[in-house]
Amino acid sequence: MDTTPVWFMRQAGRSLPEYRALRDRHGILDICRTPELAAEVTMQPVRRLGVDAAILFSDIVVPLEPMGVELAIVPGVGPVIDSPVRSRRAVDALRPLVPEEGVPYVLEAVRGLASTIDVPLIGFGGAPFTLASYLVEGGPSKNHSRTKAFMYAEPAAWQVLMERLGESVLAYLRAQVKAGAAAVQLFDSWVGELSSEDFRSYVLPSVGRIFDGLADLDVPRIYFGVGTGELLGDMAETGPDVVGVDWRVPLDEAGVRTGPNVALQGNLDPALCLAPWEVIEPRAREVLGRAPGTGHIFNLGHGVLPETDPGVLGRLVELVHREGAVDGDG
Ligand code: CP3
Image (cartoon, rainbow, N blue to C red; front, side):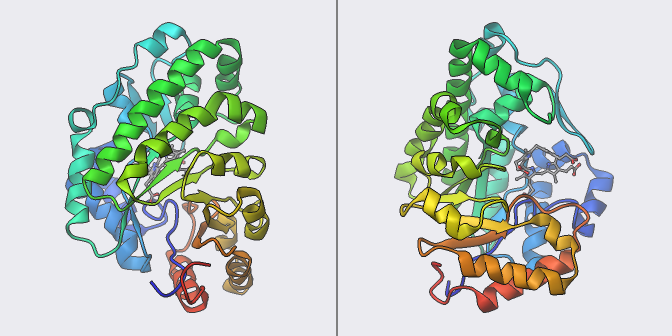
């Protein structure tokens, strides 16, 4: 590639009319569990927007179900868990994920996509803290206080929870790569809730084992969370190849925090995509201009908002391809 690559978190989904049309007929988990439908939705943004990568259509909670967790994804709310995990006993009851048995439909979707598309397919999983936040809270949460209370009050159970989720996510990501995923992203969406000190003692070891455990597969490994400006250095230490940055820290400053060993992904504010193009364009150029020399993948600082005009995303792709780094690495 001779320019900066670009894709968007949540590029498949509600901002696209073709996704909405399909969603009128199928539940989100039905789409995730039907390889042909998951593959179709994965392809929609590639066709329409010309992005440089596809991200598998699924959800971070999908692998929790075969671990013994009953859940639903409620429209406008998010994942909801029937029996929240709030005790050592509930942690011990979580079954380790065996991907070929637990989520065969995900691997079938990956295999089908990998053999047909001409852009790299990004596989993904939820990181231990973020998955734990849904398990402990029982659903979405503003400040994740129940999750943190469990972490502080029952550190031994928490450690087992991080280990169990970490091992399962590692197996899940390895299986996706073996099925044909060309890169993986670990979503730690809500870990920005923690201080650096707590991240290091309660979360970092389990994330480090995931990236270590993927190293031999030789695919780019991306680590991303929202509101993680104060954790960027710690996140780089877990061993990913790329750290995703939200819009709160400019990329040049983020690069100082992450150091010389990782590339950066990001970081246009998704809300900017709702503004007129004249406002968006200089801000997108600024993102490109601030990218460090260690490498850059253009993206938003978090997922595409449902009310975004897909036409704006298409213009962003054109702009990045036209104005991005000529050597493609920052
Ligand atoms: O192109 C893509 O990125 C889409 C594939 C995708 C989905 N979920 C589909 C989805 C991905 C990568 C995810 C990951 C995911 N799921 C994360 C990490 C990424 C992030 O945004 O931080 C998280 C935290 C979740 C949990 C989750 N699932 C939330 C917060 C929601 C939104 C709730 C709402 O309706 O506002 C979901 C539901 C969901 N997952 C939707 C989609 C397209 C929208 C609901 C629908 O179609 O009914």
